[in-house]
Image (cartoon, rainbow, N blue to C red; front, side):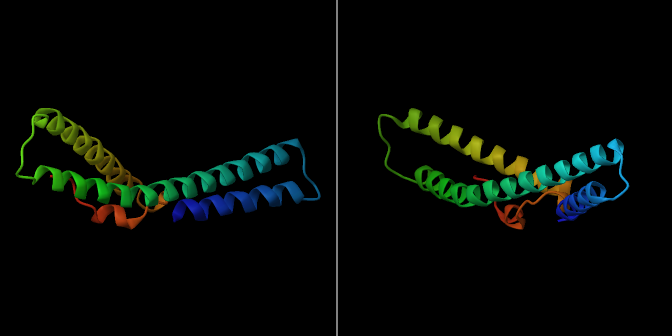
Length: 124
């Protein structure tokens, strides 16, 4: 949230500097850079939010699938291949979750990361 507030502030400062009556090349450059940084920050924040928001249901479905497959009693000839594939899927999902939760803890309100990410559990 703080990142969005800062981005809107940068855009406002940029437009104010660009529309001043008495401006020089330095003011114009700072105004353009300020507005550009603000716009890029907003686009990246919204993109990150949307990407993580769409990956949460995918993580939940993969978690349910892996746990279902690991709890099956029937064994087949391809057991070792299936176990390796499940282990790889589990590691990939857990590493994504840990990285995203770490981003949320470190950056807090500076990035738009949904709070739902902290409620997700690792695949066991």
